[in-house]
Length: 329
Image 1 (tube, rainbow, N blue to C red):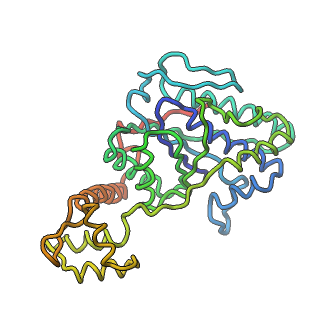
Image 2: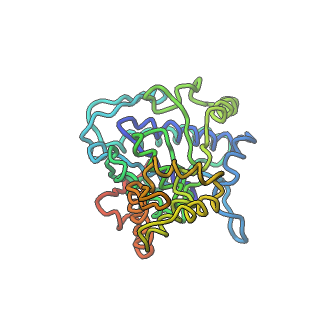
Image 3: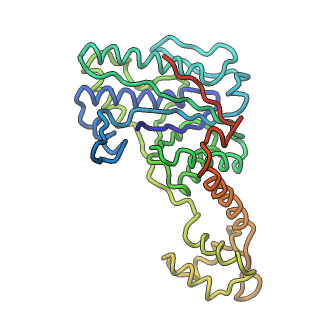
């Protein structure tokens, strides 16, 4: 089983292809014997068990792009350039075209070198999915991200946080934190719209190039730690409590906060009020706030997706919002 890379995008496909280039160069470097590149993938793939074996762990198996309807349909001018393979944006085109073209050129180059050295080549992705999302609407983005991640619950999912809007990347992080599905959140910085890493000296052509490039990539690659973005034990308890009653006493609230291990409860209550999770209804009585109701609604939708996806695959579930593109090199 390979890795499913999930990425928000805008009009710059390099935000997807640049980090994937890093992954493919690390795959090649691992084949050449770069120990740190090998370790980069060592926890990836199938759990060790009798009869289960993956020769090369961590190869991208699927690419999932979340983008606007206009970008997916080819109604917008994209922004990209590849100096390695002499590619340049020119007019309107669907977002998948430069992605597929570039990755095929890159893999053709890498595999030619590997195979001449008697090493195994790197397989192209089996799937490319394009998912329509309103990248300016956080709630739509969270709803879509939640359904999408649950649809790939049994896969190894890595989330790319380079491309896409702030709303979309935040939605991917919150949905990932809530579902606990992504194995990795990653980020590699680049200023330009290049399809390849601008900070690599050149396109690797021999073993020494791959070893040096792998060192540079590993120094620039950043894995974000799993995040606790606020939907913790306190909010879960409050949602449960307000599901069957209108108010909660100060002593009960302080006990909930203490059970979650948040310092002095009396110091934490004002934070719950200022963030509108609770509202004071009297001296020692509190009701559910607007933000708590909003959080409840958002995550109830994700739970609905979880239930619906028990008997339906994600492509059928998302329908016209999800388009599969043939990835043929």
